[in-house]
Image 1 (cartoon, rainbow, N blue to C red):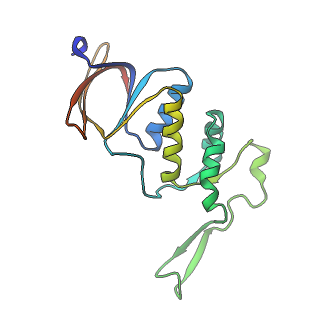
Image 2 (spheres, one colour; image 1 turned 120 degrees about the horizontal axis):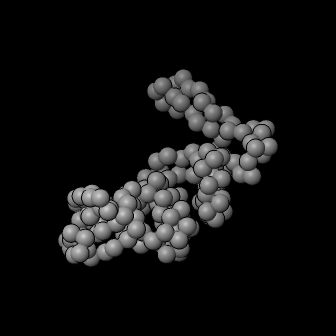
Image 3 (tube, rainbow, N blue to C red; image 1 turned 180 degrees about the vertical axis):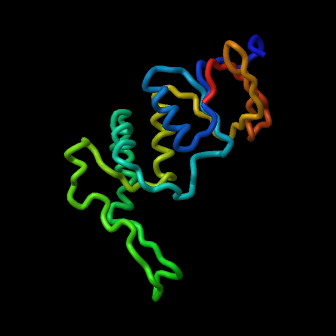
Length: 175
């Protein structure tokens, strides 16, 4: 299949959520050409995963996206923790699981950045835009249909879910 590949890249990244988009961003920063395919039409629209720990923010800082992520997080900056309730927010028993993430700013001793409360649906567009700005080929509505590995790399078939077109991709690595 290698001779007939429609697309040839060093790395094929499958999945355009937080991990795939972060991978794309870091590959782009290192000048590694790649193709990212994601079967959904765009980034997440649901506010899943909200807490970004300090180490992850350090990596995002290195990648130059910390300011953009903090801007997206501004809607939640007044939130000071996680409230757990057994039945309802009114009248039921409840307790704070995390009243304040870092009330004494102790992380400042160990890191140039800190914890960030930002929803996944706000982070993913930042990562996608920055990856594309650095030259990444990011394709949403494109699904991995199959792949085969041999001694020199991976041959994959991807489908554009909007047009139905199938493409063959040859890559050294599949993530």
